[in-house]
Image 1 (cartoon, helix red, strand yellow):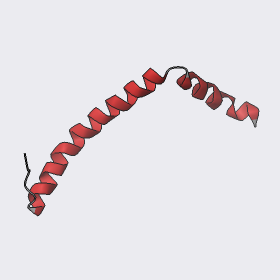
Image 2: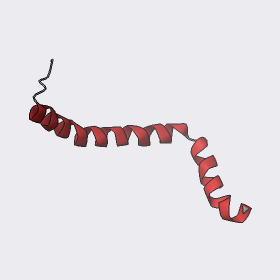
Image 3: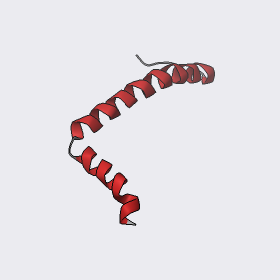
Image 4: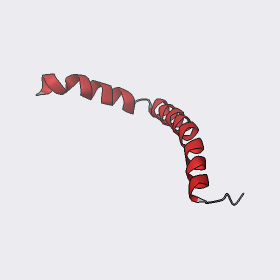
Length: 54
């Protein structure tokens, strides 16, 4: 079992040593998700008749 889990455990420990890399990856993902979701949500709101308050 240890031989099988060793690579994953090593990667996990490596990630824990660099939390800033995790945060950067999460931020990049949020930007990508937002760029996809914003136009979609705008179209959905328009389709159901919800107007922006801003």
